[in-house]
Every structure is written in structure tokens, then in C-alpha cells.
Length: 380
Length: 125
Image (cartoon, rainbow over all chains, first blue to last red; front, side, top):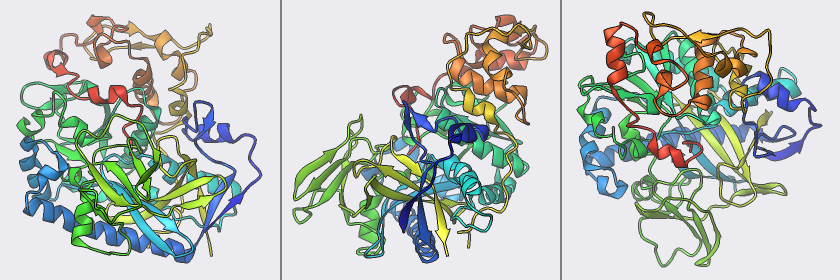
């Protein structure tokens, strides 16, 4: 794996906006990197693919373990949701996607899972669409990329269609976030192409009539994809209605994903699969023997409230509003480093299939919402 | 193995309009602009929302259609007060008309989800 530079397209912003990508620059600083890219080998693509598939299987075993042992207290999930989670797991309520974040040590060839964004992963549009069009613009037709996200999304919605409740699949996200709206509408776009009837609704416009959830036109919500975290929903006013819902709306991602999007799953994975080559050691309590580690809130998002320790001394920290529910302690990983910053690999799993990767680069070794997106190609 | 690039990509919903809807509303008036009216119910009276819709209507196109563009636009231009279609920029008579089911929808409790997001720019991880 190596990073290369291109002669930048002077029209790159307009080119991206033409395909609906409106947040390529945040606060005057480019979020999308158009003139640098990672070149990975076919062997590295294989390694990421296999690791993603293996970790997904391990994650499913970990969910089974948590549910069987009713280990919900470690996840700080409200008690009223336990039964809902168990039902959604027993019923095989479908999941559409997730993204593993990896640290890759090129010299050792080690790929280590940092975390699993199992509930509301974003940058799907950048990975599946923007990156694909970027390759098409700069490279010949025969150039390859680890990116069949678009095809896999349409295939996954097609497979899911017979299992959805009701006639309409609603898609919900927050207002005033172009990033969230774009990712949501991309998912809806692929669902439409799979033949699903869809409707957009903003999460704060979702109604409750005392029996069920409904949209702005009074249609009952029976199936809904929500780009909104479970841990927020269950603590908001309508949270309790999720279990009172007479129609038992089908939520995507399903409530059992709450267990995988929570960093409490990391120590459990380490307990179930000790010394697995793709896992970093992780614990609920800070062990004396762990000298270099990262302290992460179990419910933080986009790198908030993360503290990094070397020889037990804090060397980096990010701000935020998380940490109230507790922390986990994870062995410090070796991140890939270039002159321009530290990079991690995001590996997408759609409909149970690894199908695309993204690179995010940061000035410091903690990935945040400001981290830059770098496209890639596969070099054979 | 799915570690190859997609062979072909087509988008049926997303257009360049989506990229533009997060931009601040433009003040410039276009005298030839299309006038836009909306109602939330087929039995209700129309309210003109041309000024609100200006930014997206100028660049509309593709297969997203007016309904989708307007919804995108409303994510960034909702007026506070009441929610969604029933915001202050649309006359109440344009919300539910004589349709009893729609009137019930209007009466439903709303705003029970979404409050946590107010202090966060994106929900993504």
C-alpha cells in the first residue's frame, strides 16, 4: 500500500457537485482529497475482504453470547429495550450495512479492527459513488477498485424486499445535515432501483398517534430505515413507544445492532476470541500491564472523548460530550502514517458481504468527523 | 468476491440539486422564475412557496422530481414553530383540508425523536 499524487482537476468541486456531493469542503477545508490516492495490492484487498468476513461472523457470535448471557448492563441499554433486542435477534430482523475500521501496519502486514460502526456508519456515498466517479475521471477503464457497494446495495435491497413489513419503506434522518441527507438519499436511491416503494421523512417529523408511528401524510410507518443512532432514540420521548408500537415497526438497522455499535462489544470479542490476529486487546477496566492504550467511551461518535496513552501518559485527547455511560480500554494500534497524516481503512459490509473500502486521514492518530476522505485503486 | 469495482452506476434519485440545498438561500430575484405552490393534502387550498423553493427550483432536474427537491430543501429551510409540511410558511388551510385522515396526522404528536441531534452536526460514525 502506498500513497500517490495526481495533477489535480481544477474543476474538481464542480465535478463532485454534479453527482450530488455537496460537502466536499467543510469550513473552507477540503474533506474530499482529489489529488492523492492510495494504491493497494490485490493481496491487500484479499486480506481486508477476508478479515471483514471473519470479523462479521465473530460479531454475530458475540451478539448471540451477549443475548444468551443477558449481559446488557455492560452496554447501558435501557431495560425496557431488552425484550425488543431479543425479539429482533430471534426474528432475524435484517441488517443492511456496517463498516469496520481497521489499522493497517504495512510492514508487518497486520490488520487490526479498531471498532465496528454497525448502526449509523456514514461516508457510504463517498465510498460507493464519489470514489467510483473519481476513478473514472482520472484512470483508464481497466483500473480496479475495491468497491462494488452500489451493486451490492441494490442486490441487498432486492433480497430484503420480501421480508419488509407494509408497502412502503420509510427513510429517516435529521434535518440540517447535508452529509446525513446525502447518505440517506443514496440508500433510498438504491432501494428504489431494487423496486421498493419509499418515502423520505425527517426523524423529528415522525408522529405517534397513541398506537403506531406515522409519517406526515398519516401513513403508518411499518418499515423504516433510520440514519439515527439507537442509543439516542431509546433515550428520547418517543423511545418507549418503540416497544408499545401496535404495528411493531421494522427498524433498519435492527435493535440487535445496538450491541455491535457499542464499544462494550470490543472487550467481549477479546474475551471470546483472545489473541485473534485481527483484534486488539480490550478490557472494561484499565489493566496494569497495558502501557500503551486508548480509552474510548462505549457510546462516543466520530472520535469524540477519546484519550490516547503511551507509557500510561496521555499523549492525545479529543473533546466531546460522551463518557457518562463508561469506557473501554483498547490496546494502542499502529496506524499507517504518511507525511500528510495518519490513515485508517473503513471496510464496508453490505447484506453480509464485504464490498468496499475507504481511507480516512487525520492530522493526529484519532479519526474524527474532520478526517479527510482519500480514494484508492487496486494495482495488480 | 465483491472486491471489484462496480461495472456501471446509475442514480435515479440523487441529482446536483441535493448538493446545492445546504447552501444559504440566494437573495437575488429572478423575474422569470417558476412560481411554486404546495399543499399537504389534495383537498386543501394551495399556498405559494415560490420564495422558499427558489434555490432548488432554479437547479431542478433529473428524476428526483419536485416533491423530492422540495423535501430536501425543507431540511434546511424549515421555519420553526410547527413541523414539516405544517410549518409557518404554509397556510394552515393548505395542511389538511377536509381529509379526516390527514387531519388526524396533523394532530399526532411529533418531535419525540431527534432532540439529541440538536447538539451534533452529523449522526454518523
